[in-house]
Length: 369
Image (cartoon, rainbow, N blue to C red; front, side):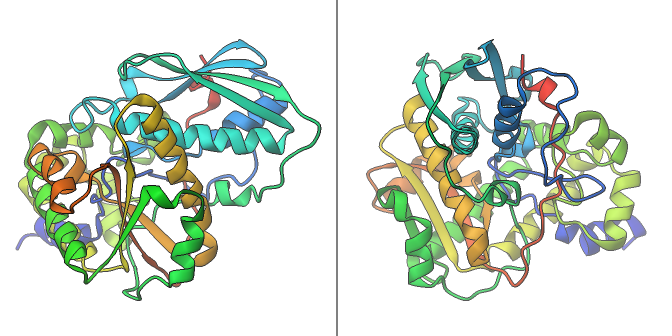
């Protein structure tokens, strides 16, 4: 085995690309800022700048951060998505972009409450590929909402070091208490858990060798620090949890072409096989259909749940390839005897340590249009 192969299999075995579409990627040289960046450009009043900044800490596929805000006036905005940050190879109908938009909206609503505003929203289209999706109006109310803002700032995806301990019933009850009808939990060793493990491996095998999907992935990996600083979005070595010499190597020598190598594809599959054997089980989010309103609502439910898990040392790792590859997408609901649409597939488990997020987030000047 030559040096390149050794690094791929010995080091990139840590490369966690099983994160599916709703996997945020967070990386910069230092921990993500835990205070709001300075409002240097004066795009909005400071309170509104703060609200949009906290909203932008939501998860998105490949960390594309697809959201946009068009300002009608200080209290009236239009929330949409930017086509150049869509993922057509794995999300051709923008289903997962809309789910991410829902997570963004949940953060925005919480942040607005912290500043003393109520938020009124209205869906403005029934076309998922439209660039403008939701009307947002903010109204001053008499008092602010209490919420621990660190739950937004410190939320993150974790991919490795899951414990196999089963979830405590009270922990599961607490994290899904607001939206119980939308959640289904399957323990790791249950029949359904084994089905999801096998299906996730197969879906990753299909996707890793589907060139359009792999090319799209390559487009969003920022191997070098130069590219991270340039784009402030996308997947990075640190957030993919590549460690040690492997990280040093890929940061200097990997490129888009590396992602298309068979060795990279095989390393990805091996990583997924290792990951799905760890953790407590699988958490599915469902909705009655895939209308825009349902997708936005489901994304909000996901975010509400995700903001609760850190205090319980529960890690979340979205692994959604079964929902992105047609042969498996059409089978998952009937195979699990479900009459709802599955919108998220999350691997969950306890961890001993909860690392801080390390996130490149685009400046708000790229979000506010």
